[in-house]
Amino acid sequence: MTALLEVEDLRVAYGKIEAVKGISFTVEAGQVVTLIGTNGAGKTTTLRTLSGLLQPLGGSIRFDGKPLNGIPAHKIVALGLAHSPEGRHIFPRLTIAENLQLGAFLRKDAAGIAQDIQKAYDLFPILGERRAQAAGTLSGGEQQMLAMGRALMSRPKLLMLDEPSMGLSPIMMQKIMQTIAELKAQGTTILLVEQNAQAALSLADQGHVMEIGNIVLSGTGAELLHDESVRKAYLGED
Ligand code: ATP
Image (cartoon, rainbow, N blue to C red; front, side, top):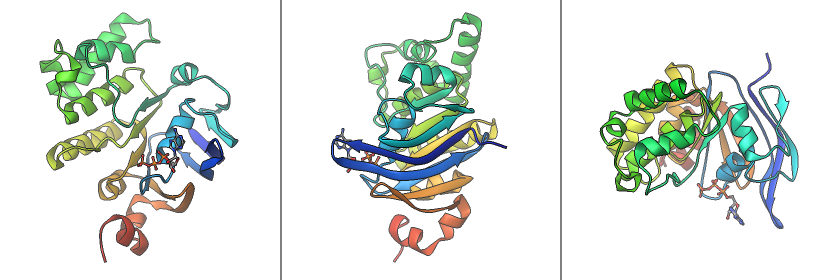
């Protein structure tokens, strides 16, 4: 079986600085795969390259059997790869409902879109309660929910989440992680970038540890959770 996403020897640079130095990994349909690692390891750069926002220096990306190299970002969304970016990037002056609508900008099926907006409200009831409110008035955690809901509006085959727990209170973080578990149970395929290694690895089928542009360790979520070097470096143990 070929994987939904196959990344091989991917290299990405900003000018002379090589931020991603030849990484390879796959994501199978139905899996949650997580990339963990310290600040500046190249996780966000990897997601932005998969989305077509950055062009790789080398290597190959295959998604759903097709090469993605050189394909513009909007076409990549149309192929089924959605990205909930770091820092959320919701539209603060638009309402919650309008933000969700924008996530479906490539779709024409009004009935299906309405159904999926309802699904987002089922997943995150607070968004339904506040649907007519400007998105900028939401709390950080609620904005994160909106960013995830919006990414789901393109009915992606693969959902990429960049640091969904960043800046959230422990309770809000737990809620977001529970939702990711719920999406996984529904069969959503997810590539998750997280600083919170404990939470991310607990959810993940596969995990990869990135350090300065390289994948230095890979394993199942459980293997990495029990790995001594991971425990020391990322789980705050001596
Ligand atoms: P974080 O968790 O802090 O977001 P990360 O693992 O996602 O870290 P990246 O944001 O991918 O790391 O950054 C990887 C490297 O690329 C870092 O050294 C960073 O300083 C550099 N970098 C990121 N964006 C740019 C840019 N626009 N121009 C130049 N260098 C950049």
